[in-house]
Image (cartoon, rainbow, N blue to C red; front, side):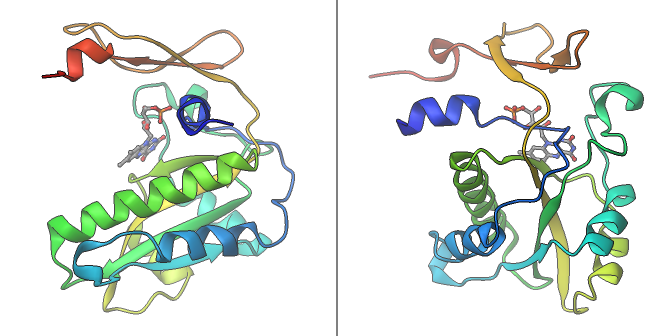
Length: 192
Ligand SMILES: Cc1cc2nc3c(=O)[nH]c(=O)nc-3n(C[C@H](O)[C@H](O)[C@H](O)COP(=O)(O)O)c2cc1C
């Protein structure tokens, strides 16, 4: 599939089938991420791929979902939760601006690579960093930054046209399928 078309459906997914990822996928994701561009080729980022069932289960209460929705709608219930994670950490002394950009590049690369295989994801910044670090025994000199939650989606998510000055919050319908407003191209880009 053409990459722009693939990106259109590569949305945030928040409910998942309880079906394991294909073997080796997490390894592929972090392998892609580690080779992406990064400031001065410093390679600050460290990745913890979480797939052992006891760790996957222990991660669930440490994540905070869908701030724009009531908890009972936006938070995946048991039987809907992600089946794997990639936790991304970086050294406490990493250059903040550059390493944050590195982080975005790595996350997007993992998300689109997973999606190419039909695996949906959610980038989660609202996470209990200290508890995740303790659970996964992440060394003190690294700080947990962000979590990529993964699984085969159990809902749809559709792009809709957003309007400047109106709410850009995502919303759901009666099936808890998501709708995500995006501003029109002409509002966010100029061609000169
Ligand atoms: C940096 C970043 C942090 C995010 N943190 C969370 C989060 O903690 N919880 C959550 O449910 N979604 C989180 N999201 C997902 C966003 O809510 C989502 O990307 C946005 O609503 C647009 O939806 P889309 O990804 O389908 O375009 C995060 C996304 C990004 C890029």
